[in-house]
Image (cartoon, rainbow, N blue to C red; front, side, top):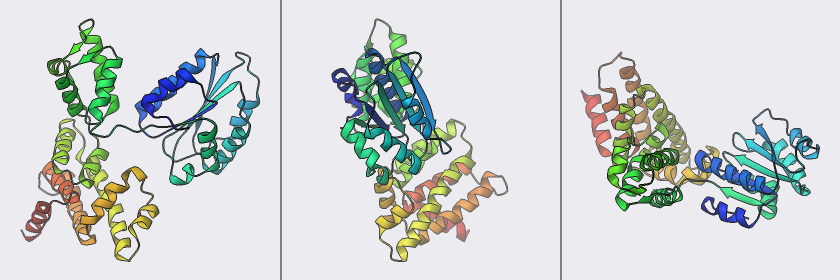
Length: 348
């Protein structure tokens, strides 16, 4: 059974599944989903929780050992297994499937995974959880649904938001759920009994500008959103981000795109190229769109410009590093002015 994150509490009021799979790399929703399941389990007498971090060297025999052992503290237990990386691997898949063949009535198994590829979603253990228990795919709301998420969260916290306050917070948080949640909590504490939230309240509460990171910059560039690229770079600069760190993120993406563009030039289908580079399904549309306007020649021009930026960032060549980073980002976005800028600089 599949359950959306916003319907978890309603689901838990009706039933408690013997096994849950929470997957996705949105930390706030993943943690809150796990907390809600734990609270519901505790309310039904599952008082003891055992947490296991399933990293690369994890011994999956621990799952069977904990499942089979008797507890000194409670007759009902919750096993909290947190998988790092892209999935449980072969040993983990076998261990999970073995347990799921005959789950125990006095145990609730909660599995959290940061990422699952298409193979994992077609695996027998995944299908068994879908059949026997509950699968929760955590993912941040899309840009058009982000204001609704903020509005609902404000109301859940006892606030009565004005539409201008919702839109202002959505603009400033820029899709960062954790940042938005922290600011809503701050507003709740500051306003107290006066729970009406206006745009002025958002402004005076000390809400910081959007908390951008390099990966958001890369995605904005791939999407061809020049205005957002400019805004993110401005915030990164104001936050004191090292230019070399920004350059590293951009160059890493350009190199992968160059490899894919070369493969396409050799006649390989785009879907095969995306699979070979292990592009996550959530980013395939972005990357596919970027490859439509970024030829192999253009990507190599971007790499030449990036090499120049490395010297500028280290002070061995003159230039405004943030202006140059903007030009590089706009080049990824497919802006013609980058290639004009690039040609003029090479001719100078």
